Image (cartoon, rainbow, N blue to C red; front, side, top):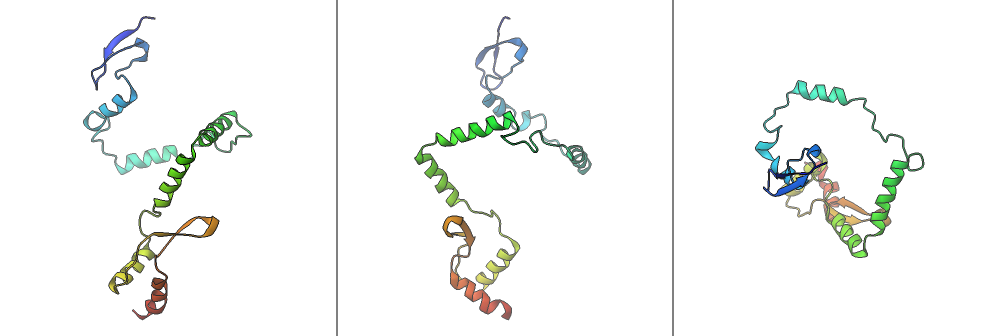
Length: 163
């Protein structure tokens, strides 16, 4: 089959490919850039509640292709598990340490719970300094979030019922 040349819609680069591929872009990056904003076919599309509910109902009850499959029972799942294991085993110690450091700095939850909001309000009203979501470490169980100062806990125990 004869290849054709065409111009990428995004970067205007000349590309050669087979006509059966029906390409318009030189690569996926150019395609993604092109279809942002106004060029996206769904740009400005408003989903009504009925439309959302219809799609939701249509997708309910759909069984995922890998439900109940394990690496012992399915070759595809096994290959995927081996690929992930291999990728992780090839990682340098420096890469592992970078991931550890990033996980330590991560703050969970990203938003305050109702009880945290109430507690923080009491503390702020009474001029108590605190650091929200400060991590502390509990042996091999890993990182936990708590109020940064034990004095805060004693303050709350003594004063919460008095307000």
